[in-house]
Length: 102
Image (tube, rainbow, N blue to C red; front, side, top):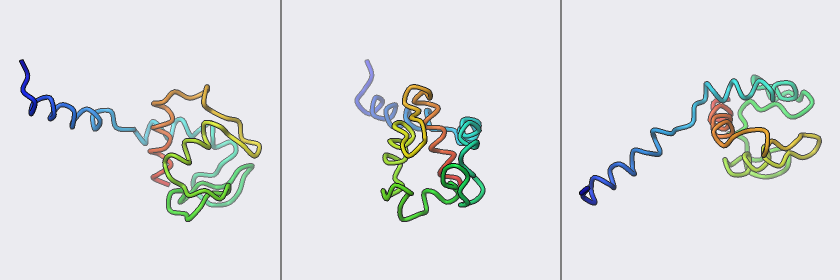
């Protein structure tokens, strides 16, 4: 039988084992790069995403929090299609990890 401290230790390490992968997120971003620049703030079809998580607000006026960016990716808007059904949760998490590196 496992002790409570062993179970607690396992629970602490599980999330880090499933951490998002920015390199895989860069691969997911390839489909986004048709409309978005990753290396500049210059607008393509959509806004440039360089420094996205360092900005005070996104083009939609909301703060660039992980939750708000994920909601925008899922729902789309302003000409961008929603990716709720096109990306897996893992792909979205990896994409967010990549966007944080820009």
